[in-house]
Image (cartoon, rainbow, N blue to C red; front, side, top):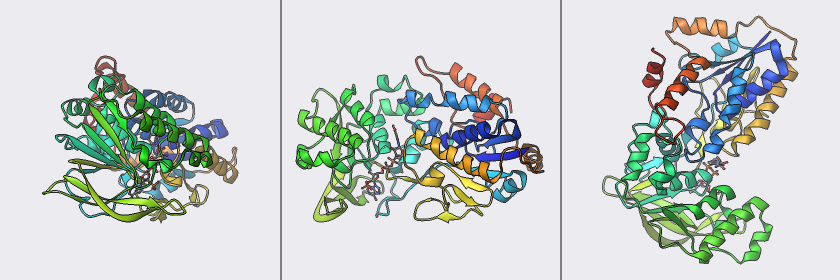
Length: 436
Ligand code: NAP
């Protein structure tokens, strides 16, 4: 028998567990360990609440959790309740699938002013992440800005711009739904340091902007190079740029109250305000021969009392695990960190790709483990039994998938009409739902 620990129950963790389960069958037990009693990681806390079809992937993860040989051990924080070296004593292999939950810093003056928020925190706030439930973002002004031209920036801008009616069918938490409904924000400026051909937004997500009830995209036709420049783009990117060109050609829909303004060639220099964020000072850029942004010396200001910085994420370091400071992820070679220690997903590659990208990633690392510890081989490491005994000495009470099912039932029962669930946003409430 082999015992494997997968740390993190987001997409990377579940696909790895699925692959290990298939490869070893009854010859191994796979424990998916998570710091929270609820599974799914990014799918629960990161995917936008108005993108329910993407969240449906959790049904597949449930099948993995329900399969023989795979268990969920929730409410256990690796690095606090148990160390990596202790996990390696108990398991034959440990796979870190902890994602990249930390915001990258902008590194400009004023970014610590109240009113400047990282996208991980803002997304966590509207998605019911317990760490950010009390964020209370300043939604009282008419102007907000989002820094970055990726899909997360677009998620944040869209959630700020949608009407209550557009949001309430998803699983946005009530505290965010109520706060957004009464917010007077009318203009969300989306700042990209490069041009429309360099965006990291995908066509499906950009296409939604043409069908919003309360908001209209505002794109300046003067920002585009001649149309033949699009020919060199990869097809998906060309589609995204075509959508932006269409929005620019159509002009803003004046019947809509809210504007999502794309401000390209805009590099934030500093954030200013009297004790809180009030404006971003920007330098206009142009592209050099390698499509990098270089400053032109032209300076202007964008007013905003809420500024969301959405410029990418990093994985938190874990004691005893080699770390790549520049990449913001674990140092690894094809997912291998050290003897019997591996990583997958964003902790392996950095924060890129879709949920589906994590599947081949998890399967690849599982295949590597299979080569090093062929099915049929065994060890006398104790796995979950030993881990649980150790946790008991530390008064840590793990939860299992049946516990999650109970929480899930309560969340579904509490849901507002049309919404799949009303999420608990505090760990105490999850445990209370379990009578603990
Ligand atoms: P991302 O796609 O890497 O975008 C980061 C953006 O930040 C880029 O536009 C980048 O511009 C900009 N940026 C970086 N440093 C900057 C700085 N110092 N100043 C100004 N701008 C800066 O990251 P993400 O949006 O966080 O998304 C992470 C991953 O999740 C992506 O693969 C994304 O597609 C995926 N995702 C998918 C969905 C979906 O499918 N619906 C939703 C959300 C996220 P440069 O290009 O100039 O570096």
